[in-house]
Length: 355
Image (cartoon, rainbow, N blue to C red; front, side, top):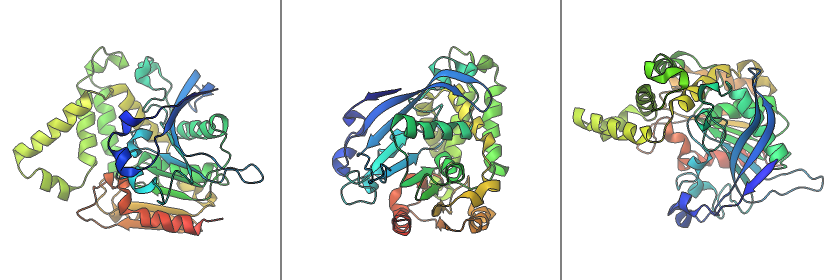
């Protein structure tokens, strides 16, 4: 069942709408009935929130040819792309994903944004979800809710990048091109797993968490926000921004205190645990569409010195790996939403995958 809520999201976009010249999105919810999770748990109604820009266009056979799915990162939402450095670089007139030409879909994943999540009321009784569940919900959003039967492009950042790898092998004939950003096509392991475990253990072992039934946010949420702050940028930028002990403490406290006002411990716990079923390695050869993977050299979560991306991309017949070098413009893991850094590769991907 689709419940469309057409909103001119001017308050959400603020001044960037004028700067970017892209249209205000339409927002809505799709309700997926009796959704069964891979854990075996079910929800009578799973709400998936979305934003769209543009309109779908079908060919003579009724196949949608201009839909673009853009997937967000852990603890984010589709709203994060409605910024000048992303939408303002891509969605405007004459730009690569001009909303006058493309039908852009920005969903909120399970457990994120305005989609169903633990903090809605179920708390730790919310079904355990994984990336496979999130991708299934995205697929049903498109096919059942928005009547999209094909995608011109799937792209995503961080967690959304990992989803993009999985999309390519789960639905290999559903898209023309794939662009994962700030991700690796391998199981979560090593430092990437460790920082997540630090947060997961801090919350689950916190007496204030009360098995998810807390009345006020447990202090372990602060640890979670501190870890997210730590891994989100690069050391060079952090040193420039925080050259003294006092400056580092002030920047950390400001960021964490801001996040504490809106974050929820259960939501973050579930979001990080969701990555435990991610492991696209065995199925990479199933990916048929051209895939350009873009990482940055200063990404603490996916460091290039591991060589994983360069090794695994060789298994894709139409794959290409790009690592953007460190510069004054890169932002570590956060480089994924600064489109000016990598949009030239998006252009090449769209040209290579043109039908």
